[in-house]
Length: 277
Image 1 (tube, helix red, strand yellow):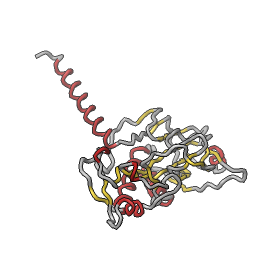
Image 2 (cartoon, one colour):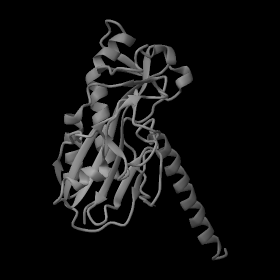
Image 3 (cartoon, helix red, strand yellow):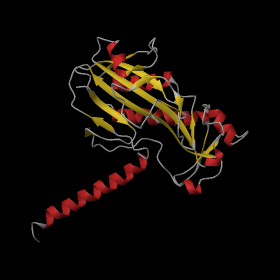
Image 4 (cartoon, helix red, strand yellow):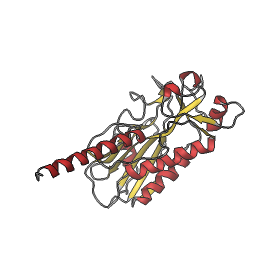
């Protein structure tokens, strides 16, 4: 047997492995979150953290949703909010995930990666809106700044099941459950085939995040997350975070849905945030 046969076999095996992992990971990463990694420098331990909730029914000027663009120094991080020009017809904003929940998850993830996070609030400037650059300038003495928009969202399986007023208000998870299944206390979490999903079910519950960490040296981004957008040096590691897709439908109550949303985000942040050297 020719020796040239062995490299070809190895190459084919590796290719099959990559295809298999890629296919399975695409399923778990159905929302296509990716981290963007740029030149990183050591010592950025003391990180100021700024959070902003972004309801699905609102937008910032010229930005319809939080994954539309990366958070830049010129981004308006506080106000003015406007009614969203376009809303996903099956999306419902969730009340149960607030700043306190996000602070807990994000701080835990940052500490695990070797950072010293400081939760800092942002007040509106007297003149109105305030940009990321202005916020950084008013908070000196930090090694880095992490700005995060987040949007906790439940998707019902069918457009006709969406609450009629989802375009201007948020809902509690228990309220969503009761609307879909009056008096039942639980709701069906449908499998991946939306066309075959039962009526009055949900298809997904997710905490969307867009994040940028800026270094103090020139205010350049150290890493960025913005939905499906990629750039810089992408972390090549493939991962999966629960809940995994399934062909079966199952019942879930409000507490279970919230737990899955929290655990999923904690898992994703573990992969998205780079380790501090």
